Length: 352
Image (cartoon, rainbow, N blue to C red; front, side, top):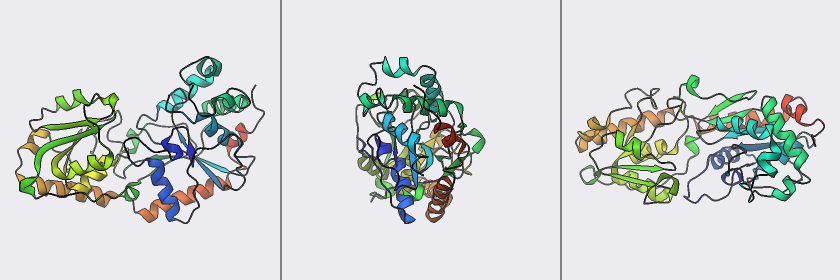
């Protein structure tokens, strides 16, 4: 398991949250697979691996720190008899094919002449000896359907809303049962704060204001979110058990079921989730507007929080099923090594 971003390579996240790639690794390990989850070097030996599971981000993003070595694995997998699986992990994943097209159409300008990507892992190799491989991968990802690509999503999502990907097969898996379990403190309902908690990586102040909240709100996030306060994930989840409300701002494809760990941890804490109405349209009676939630007494809040918890947890895909399906797709990818359209196209003569 490797990829283009640090978390996809098993690197520590500053906020301490468990990355989707960590959940895929857990699922594979549960099925008895031997998993190496790491960044790699150019020309790393792939002959002992059955499958390479590659995480994708836009190649014109500064998040693509390990792009060159991920592309090297993609390029050489077929020759090593190694199958390929891709996955996406950011809700804006439709930016991956767009960014790939932008860079593939003019790789020299976007990569060699740009100073934005000076800190990419093994950049000197990628722009030197590895350049023909980089170009070939970009062009193949632009022009041909990708290998099977995993998308993390809840089972109640509306599939038609989920953005498409240029893949031979898109596989939706729900990693909820592999999320890290926290010992979340649960205070007595009468002592629980009537307050909202919003943890975010992006600026959601306008959306929060639009909800007309009367309870105080803890706005917590990274520098990009313009929040004054930042917490590690364990501390943030602890707040879910102390306050009644958890906020979830909408995405462009709300309702698709895109997997979000805040839903898992809000449910585990017995908190009440306020999201966009479209977000949980696949869950009956999950949504209530802010003014209705804030008008509830402690017993009503406890009952509604328990109802949302019930709806969420009964919807989770069973852990054994996730593992079984993931291993099946790994086996399928391994069997397709010599017949994959993508790998056949990528194994042709590299472009100088």
